[in-house]
Amino acid sequence: MQAAWMLSAALVTGACGGGQPAPGAAGTAAPTGVTTTVTLDGSSTVFPISEAVAEEFQKATPGVRVTVGISGTGGGFQKFCRAETDISNASRPITKKEMDACAAAGISFIELPIAYDGLAVVANPKATWIDHITAAELKTIWAPESQGTVKQWSQVRAGWPARELHLFGAGVDSGTYDYFTQAINGKEGASRGDFTSSEDDNVLVQGIANDELALGFMPYAYYNENKANLKLVGVDDGKADNGAGPILPSVETVKGGTYQPLSRPVFIYVSAKALDRPEVKQFMDFYLAKGGALAEEVGYVPLGERGYQLVAAHLAARKTGSVFEQAGSQVGLTIEQLLSRESQ
Amino acid sequence: MAVSLGPNASSAGRRRADLVFQAVALVVLAVALGALAVLVATVWRDGAHRLTWQFLTSFPSRRAESAGIYHAIVGSLYVIVLTAVMALPVGVAAATYLEEYGGRSRLARFIELNIANLAAVPSIIYGLLGLGLFVRTMAMGRSVLAGAATLALLALPVVILSTREALRTVPSSIREGSYALGATKWQTIWYQVLPMAVPGILTGLILALSRAIGETAPLITIGALTYIPFAPDSVWSAFTVLPIQIFNWVSRPQAAFKDNAAAGILVLLALLLTMNAIAIVLRDRYQRKGRP
Image (cartoon, rainbow over all chains, first blue to last red; front, side):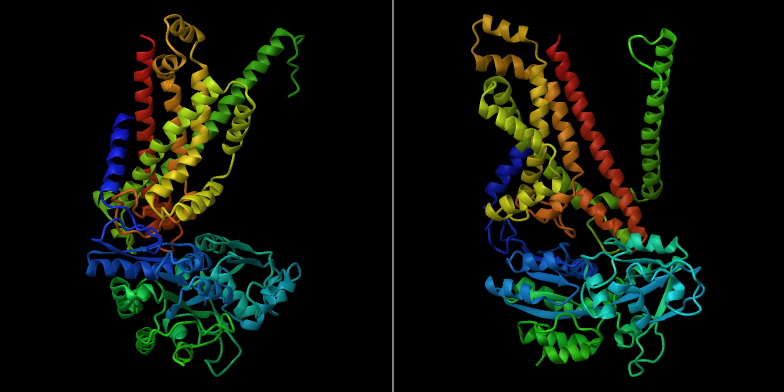
């Protein structure tokens, strides 16, 4: 115990000798002026991209520390709007309420789409009867009023077996669930409640891989890592102008805007005040330069060269605010449409 | 059970009941230990091959094979040492007051009731308290200090309760002997009672710290980070701990990260066992000192 006492005494005196922290300096305590820190927090969906960028950035830029937290998109914005973080990861656009909180605290921000995420619809490999599904059929299955009534495959499409339908989906607190319900049922958070839900997508992978009668949705990256145990189901949105017939999610179809309605952009939000700090500016430039390749490496779909140029221009112009101010999540928007709105 | 255990039961019946109970107890023990053995064996099978020097000395990475756990080991050690430093003096002082000075006063009973309740509060509540009090009001930020203070709160009730138990086991003949030699109350407590209670206090502390080192929820709440490419270098540093790193690896899509998580669990187990071993050695030493 004595050793522990001495060690801790050394820690405490060491810390005091090293200079008191400046509380309020972005809420994080950097003890000395030697190293500077860039802090990110927010969505677990965007985390792998930001983590990869942070890892590479630090190899290239010694002396700057980058930390990335996972608090969920909502939790991230709460910290962001209290000036506790510099950059917020978000798998959906900022909401009106969150914007008000930021405005009240005097935080203005720049909204930057940085990649696409596709939601994969998957079934068990033994489910021979299914290779594609239409958006309308998905709605038949997942609509709130289907709860307790749509219980068999045969109720969805004639020819499918009269056997039980077992549903799996993302947890109701996730941005993935918000987006899926918005895209399929037309309203964020509106869906039946009698399905197996989990915030941990690996639980969904296990569940579907072991259940012949399962159908579910999950981020494309999780399908991609478990291809052998899952069957990817093509989705047909019923519109011919963005690719006719059922379409499987892939880098090309997500980027090209034909895998609809289940692909979405993901964002980072950078505080305008933090951007005045050279290390944050440096990190953002690095993010936009290398983010695409790194996003692809960790299982996401990059925006494409033109996309990143537009985003970089947007950052350079320091255009604050959100294009989603009025509408919330938008389904079926390609990145070019989105960015042209951003630059208006 | 149908066997009557009343005072009138026949001798053979009572013996049979005794045997049945013994068998049930053995089976229960075997099930518990068996489950533990299976768990450890599974984790060992998955994680042993990742337990390399590289793993122990590297920082997190998006690539499973180059990711390491050094930052989390240092973070856990920082947090647990600081937690002990905060919880031990306060806990022992509080217990001493309640046991030796408080008596049956209204205040003492009120405090006692609250401590008993605190011991049963879910850890996430401590996390929320830590976030409001340490991180924001006291402006500690997401620092090691804030994390340790939160865990110290979590550990305090256990430390206090076990210290009180330990103080109670000191025979009153020791106190009376001390008084008879003219010692004051404080001298009696400091030179006689507390040293004799050390083994019990240490046991309580180690139980409390073993719980604290495995805690994830309160630290996530106060904002312990998930990706942190450096080891903490002062109490004001940002940090992460082993359970958070393990949790993060388990939830990733790539299978290779699950092996990392298993290896992380082995590291955490080793750390726990080391802590417990140190506590047992210390306790035995003090026990020998206490009763020559």
